[in-house]
Amino acid sequence: MIYTWAGQVAVQVPASVSVGTAQVTVTYDGRTSAPFPVQVAQYAPGVFTLDSTGKGQAVAVNQDGSINTASTPTQVGNVVSLYATGVGQGDPPLTVAIGGQSAALTSIKKIAGVMQIDVRIPGGIQTGSAVPVVVQVGNTSSQAGVTVAVR
Image (cartoon, rainbow, N blue to C red):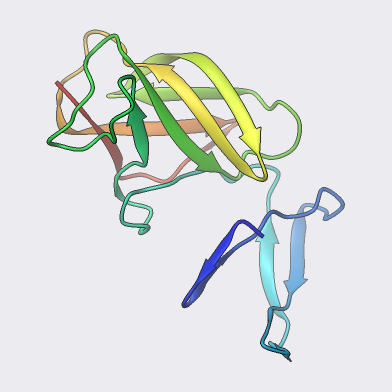
């Protein structure tokens, strides 16, 4: 279990579950839901966002420890920490693009199904309060519409 709140449950899929369709049940307060099908993929990267919708401002921490927002942007050349899930087992091939440019990975940490990805903001990108971020694991990219603020 990663987290829960009203209407949403995030769990880490056990390594023993095969790629394909799996049946899932949820038990809460002694009651168990009817089984429902869930597609299991080798990789399904998703970047966490501040409003939990999966779009907009990424959950990102600037090099100085502040939360990355339009009012506290990072700078080109600085390192920003991103948080993602769905990166699979082991050490899969991972890349990050910010503003359409490849970003250098400086550190990767995995804890309980969540990955902290530290990347350097590449030069030559268009700056602004909504610069696109894409995490790619293998051949699978994270959701569209995730951004960071860069000045």
